[in-house]
Length: 379
Image 1 (cartoon, rainbow, N blue to C red):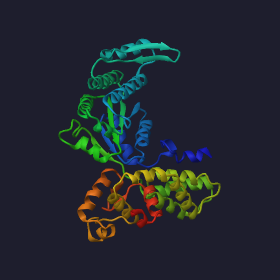
Image 2: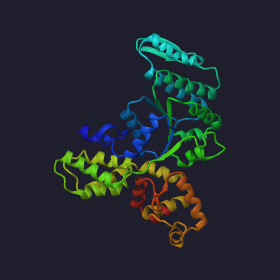
Image 3: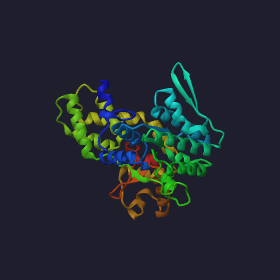
């Protein structure tokens, strides 16, 4: 049973559990091997971390993810980068103590100290410099060490938009730019879920990171890919499986959102017998019920006008949100719609697809809004 569940993991999807993203994998692999830095943007739970980790495993080079979501000040960022520095330096260092000592000589200004404990050799570094200058020393020193052993490495700064919200973000961004521009053996990936904030950081001329990297924006996996993969896995699980309407129902309910495809399939693949279409529906509705508390909390943070528009889009995506038809439906003027919709887009409650339609981004929220009365919701 655990083998089947792992094909639809709740966390990172790696190995056999990872599929598709062929073009993105090739592009990232090329960037990692050729020291080309990248900004990877996608809503949360689209599989950014899985993609990056999968590529690192495929091309077999060391890498480290730094989670900046909890970052509240410069000291947190400095500490996180120091921890990354030590871990990666240990990965690329020779095992022999004398050889390691020669390598860490490249970071003499960080006062390296190598001690021996029951767990093996332990490296410690310290700096009397201000946090911003310490960040530069750490990243430039790590690049020097990687160059010495001729090893490409990757640092992924995840949820990087949080840095842009810090009081002294300009000095941190400037320090990181300095390190990135002088890098020869470290490839940097700046990933995040807030498109609005990341675009500001990398597209505003007055910001230190202006035009530093190429941009990759992850889209949802195509329905035909899911059809093929889910059908293959269904036949493997239940031996005989010929009800493809179940696959279509999974795709329809989850809207091809990677996290929710896995969430629904993880439950269905636990069943002893192949599920019928109504079983998939009931399983999805039961799952939404378990998620209702956080959905209510998210909706409660919106203004009445924002909730009004979100509820209307949950019932019917639309291309012309400022026209008379939609204005009449939500009982709002065009200027009010524009103001509320811009915030919903910025905060990733709504997105605009390639056909120009405005849609609810999270299928769990969309289903929840479908299940309650539209007019009761507006009251």
